[in-house]
Image 1: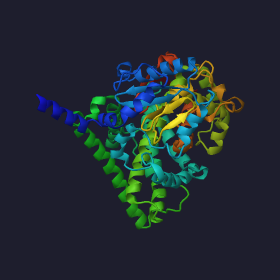
Image 2 (image 1 turned 90 degrees about the vertical axis):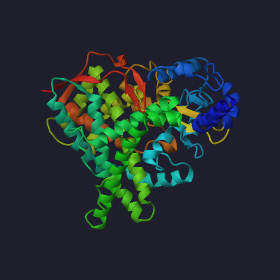
Image 3 (image 1 turned 180 degrees about the horizontal axis):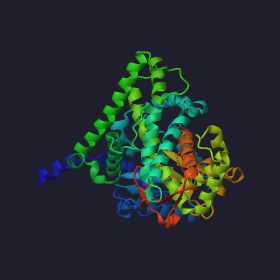
Image 4 (image 1 turned 90 degrees about the horizontal axis):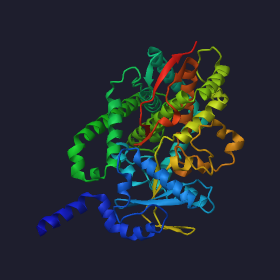
Length: 502
């Protein structure tokens, strides 16, 4: 019996990462975390019982604890989950004495180690822009920044228009019916990012049987199972449940990007690709860095996969929620349509950068949708040193979760925060707020490089779809629930009646 217990203990120590953390760092962190505001926390187990349930439970719990913290005048609350000690800021920089914390966490060059949940991604995206830390990350970020300069973004507008026109075709084929807009924009976003990054057309909007589409969705599904189900952190349980399926999806993803890279490199070496062209996919920018000796082929492979992962999920989630808002807010949908109609008239032409600048109300509508329905559940950071802020001590090794839903629904910043009001985004009104009160894609040095890319894509999609169709549903805005997965997904299908405009 004693031998069995010893072997069990050794196996647990070897297989369960969070138990290692408990032995090594938890005993140091826990006494300090206990002093922070938050719910009652059992040693090690923490708030597991409060988080048990379906994927809607975590966000409800976070929002409830944030409300309690604000009522007490606290700027944070802390929880423990199976040895992970996590602190949540509940405001941007609006509560006195706490603005420095939020800015520090997101801007500090030292606190840029992403949380443990990012580890799962490394099998696909490797040591790339999304997972690198320290100086290697700074060097990579420096290489990336020019790629999303205004002049570069203009080169992708043709790609946005191309795939938005295909979406119009798909909707036209289903006119007069209810359409699952989540599925539509999921395929559109993947087609856009693969075209813009790799220079290849998957065409999943018209042919949803492409194996890469299935592999992307399957991988992100398994990632969420890994994040949300602690038993999956035990290697033999993971291997029993998902390993074969996981490896199959991973092989498809990596083989596809390798094939695209090799084909592109051969064309470059044969002189069939002009790396100096103004309009070119990201992969050509990467190969330019490769020819300059700044990047390796492995760097290209990792960041190509990284941009596919980061560039389609958040955009598709944002567009899903935007269409939900359009369908449930007919008055504001009409205002968007009238603005777009005034810009384009009866012309069946592409959307230009100048058109996008004129879409002022539409941009406010998009921002309000992303305030109420931010696409990402949380931005994670792991503290690399002890941090003393005012009366609170945050220990090294503990984690910070910046949850956009929590920040965006602060009534001190956004009165009646669940009311959909694009007027919050008039310049005079928005300028009164800290930039850290609106973080749909994070903020600071590890913010999303593709924010403007995503905004251009979303405006282009709306410029085409609202010219051609109206969208409606009998449901109300807040009938929808939030499922915390890799992104924030609706809990009920976004089925909207698509009606052609006369």
